[in-house]
Structures are given as structure tokens and as C-alpha cells.
Length: 170
Image (cartoon, rainbow, N blue to C red; front, side, top):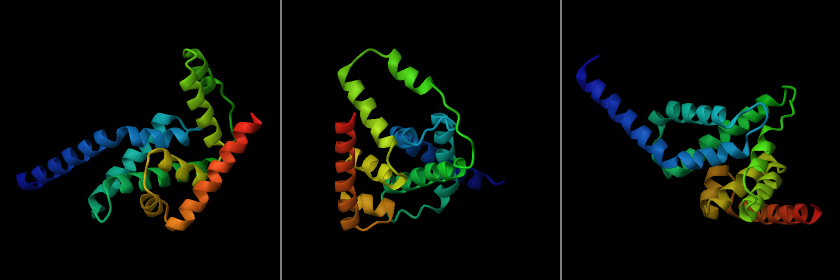
């Protein structure tokens, strides 16, 4: 391979690594919401980064990089969950045990409760509320999910109502 091609490949690789470092927390948040007993957080994260790497050369920069990352991360996690539906579920206490070993910080407990409720939502609802919690605009949410802005607003309102109802039932 000639040195010019090697320099281009190294440049693309460095650029990609920089993007991953910048959006690492975002990717982890998406993966966290889709973690199941059969899919550890790190496995999902690794799959998302691999899919981002494969798609990076084709990224045309027609949308924000964050929108592109969210779209690939959500699609990767949702695809994993779809494949996993055919696998028997194993019950584990490790996730709950991790929460219980931490100090009893009221804010942390509220966050755990919120994530438990969010995990009970459907895949699309989970995606929308995640984007909302990341303070994405309705336009960005629509672009990422493929819905219209009006549909995003309607679904978000219904999701908030569902979460309020879940909170009252606990």
C-alpha cells in the first residue's frame, strides 16, 4: 500500500476515534436502555461502535453527526433485541444488586426508578424518551426516528402520561 493511502486511512481512523470519544457517553446511554440479561452493556456498546466504524466511510454529513450516531446506535440495539427474542431469557440479580450496593442517594434512587419505568416501554417509545432526556429538539427526534415532528410530539405526550401512570401505580 502506498504511503498516501496509508496516511488517508490513518487520518480517517483518527477522526473516527475522536468522534467516538466525543459521543461515548451518548452511545453508552442508548446501550444502557437496551441492556438485557443476555446483552451486557459492553457487548452492545462494542456492536454499536463496530457498526459506526463500518458505516463511517459512507457518512455523507447530510445530517448532524449526533443524529447519525443516535440512528445507528438505536438501530443496532433494536436489532439486537429483535434477535434476542428467540433466545430463552435468564433471570439475573446482578443489575439490581449493583443498584442496591450504592449509597441511598435519593436522586440516584429516582433515576433508577425512572430507568426501570423506561425499560418497560416499547422500543420506539424508549427511543423517543431517551432522545427527549438528551434534550434533542422535536425536529432532531423526527429525523432520527423517521417520524414526523407532529407524531413525535404526540408520542412524547403519551409516553409522559404512561410514565406518570406507572409512577402512581408503584
